[in-house]
Image (cartoon, rainbow over all chains, first blue to last red; front, side, top):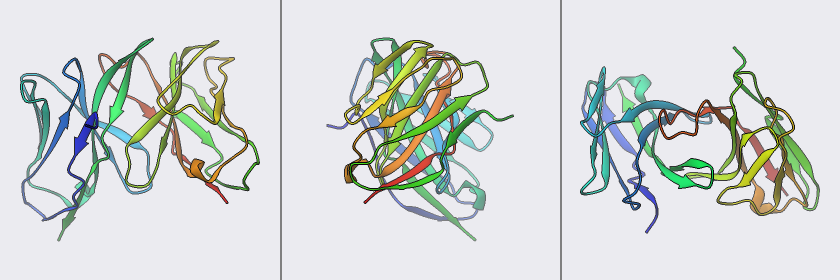
Length: 112
Length: 115
């Protein structure tokens, strides 16, 4: 089983729609969770951290379910500019602290 | 704000050639990383460094070498390039060891093709 798994999509949604992505992770000892956004042919950038109690940043809501080992990202009122690939990221312990395990990403296309 | 700067942005190599991807950051971050991203795949960690003079292998280090003589610079060396090394390479840095903020600052990437 891969460490971080995501549905690759693509998710095609109209502007204004609500869309949700899920991600599962295999290492129950993982402690920190994040969503990154990657635009086409660009570098990834941190979108938001995912906290145990769930957290919201404007139109974006992230949830964590430790028992089932999954993370979700909800985008409300989708904008054309939300079109990108969303990477689920989970920390993994390493010799010198932590490293990040990246999922393959879920592609979102928001259409007019 | 330069952030993380990588060069070159594009390069085509012949099998067996060698080259160095340069990476420099001006944020005084101790932690630096090299990732590769193949089409439709997640980022894979090649090497990382927790400070000047200290480097360690990541998930896919074979065929690569790194050095960290200064806080700012973290070059990645490809020896005897192979087609399997065709990829997009990202250099990144972070303020901490990622356990808290999880924020990596990435360079714009270097697209390498080995023919």
